[in-house]
Amino acid sequence: MTWIARDPAGACELGKRALLSQGYQIDDANPTRIRGEKFFQPASDRGVTLSITLFCLPSSLGAAVYANGLETRYELKSAASSTAVNVAGIGGISLPWASDKEALVKVGEETIADADFYKRLFGLIEGLASGTTPSPVTSTAEN
Image (cartoon, rainbow, N blue to C red):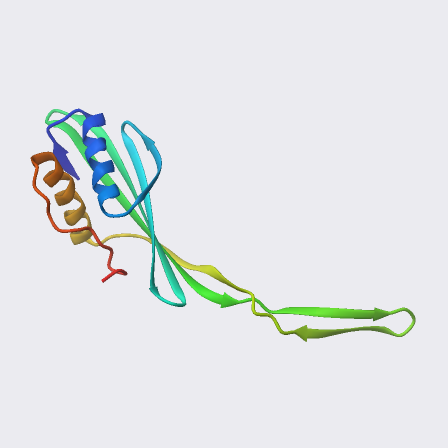
């Protein structure tokens, strides 16, 4: 959590700009809640989606900004298929059919607990509030 000397809507606007500056797509936004998502591919057969939700609440110092990060991991998997032939009176036979169908399959999801991740995120937001530009925000999977 960090405090910004602005109203909650102004603090969330800074959070929105911080996420946009790091390549996040803003897919849910209202004046006091911002949700951003970023997809990256650390290897040719793996993908990761990083989702960040910012909540900006009123406080005696202006606004308190809370963040929650969620990392979802995907792997490329091949889908097997088969074909069947049925002949009346004789029965049926099912044979494997070669398939090159591949899809990204969700293999894990966890809340980001890395304190340094949130420290960099809040540093970026605070930097925008003060006019400075700190280092970019990356997840542990991107490093």
